[in-house]
Length: 196
Image (cartoon, rainbow, N blue to C red; front, side, top):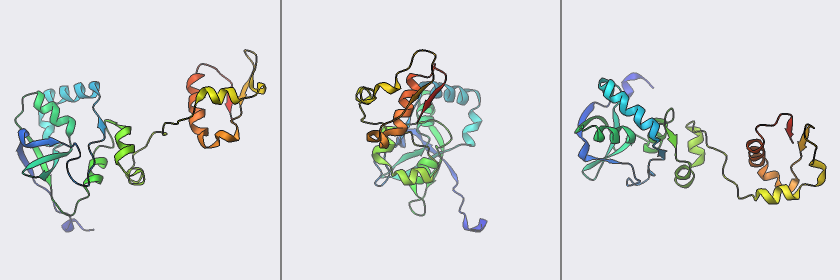
């Protein structure tokens, strides 16, 4: 692709009253899968107060939808701007054709913020997310931890100070990574633990 093939999108000032947060209202685009962490929110708010000129470097990315605009990238900034009393925001309006809204929503947010993993797992395609660089957490398991530990025979019991090796039974092979994580979390203070 050559530079003449890339069309630059001009920045526009758009009334914040016309911008809606992405709640899944655009067909084919699931709701914004980001959690808004209160600490990150306050950091962003302070950043905008101290350096408002940076808004011109990182516009909101919006999509025209039924006479309004849906925030594809910048949901937290939109909330902060409203709280701070701004009435307009610099925006790039994504054209109706030639752009993958799902890719934009994920790729523009991949380096900051926290994902709402429930929304990602429910509404987004795992293969696409992984292709875009999203590191998905290990899925929650329905394994009953008590049943697992009760299934271990006495060979895993050791005296305090001895090396502990836990062998995960074949019945739980599909849950091996989850079990390892649970054991490590439960025993993080102990040294010399080997999990096989």
